[in-house]
Amino acid sequence: GALRMGSRSWEAGLKKSQETAELRSMPAFLRRHLSQALPLKWEDTQPARVAFEGDWDRVRFIAPAPQRHSGAGLYEFSLEAKQDTEDKRLLLYYEPYLPGEDGFRTNIESPQLVLMEGLEDISFDYFGKEDAKDTEKWRDRWSERAEWLPRLVRLTLKTRNEVARWPELLIALHRAGD
Image 1: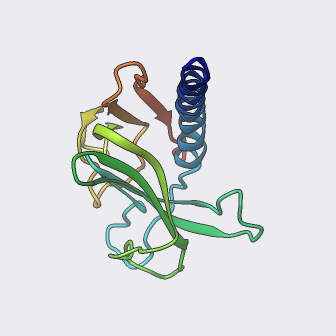
Image 2: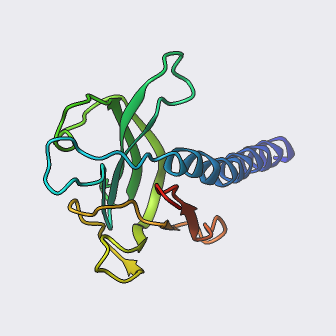
């Protein structure tokens, strides 16, 4: 009985350790990728539009290659909230960026990384002004017709596990001229 209880305690400790490591590493991973979003413009659009799109459940942007890739270059990234059976997952899709395009590819399918699972809720919000006539404010959508990147992206995650609470994550983006 004591051995079984010790084994269960050990497993519970390992699970808690994994959850804590995930909570520590994910903000750094997301901050690194999103903060590198480049204020590129789609070439064939008039007026020129920035290569960045955001909704409450997805953000798409262009940034340097992921660190684990030995090759250089730019990649098209998509961070997306997807509904599983009961829970939501945060997924990362990325593909090499193809210059000369006039918008994001409609269906990036691979490679895919599952960043987090077992989430109750995920939402993205964006702060800034989309064009010179606009005012800076928080919004749950960043228009594909925007002239600039948002100043900030806010990611709010709610886990089912009350012990593993995520703080609100604010990520500053570099904008041309700022």
